[in-house]
Length: 66
Image (spheres, rainbow, N blue to C red):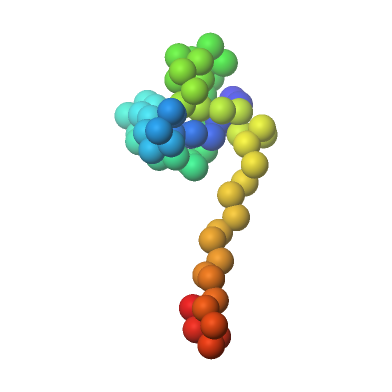
């Protein structure tokens, strides 16, 4: 089954439920049907086409403290 990344929809914060399990933006889920309505609505995007998000690094202020 293809893997899809949860995009969060239009507001970027919406999760989805698949087979009784909740997935939040950034999670990966397997969907059997490429015609699933969540893909067409923009809640899921093919995982191979989504760039991984790197962790946020702390910004250092003058004086060397974060």
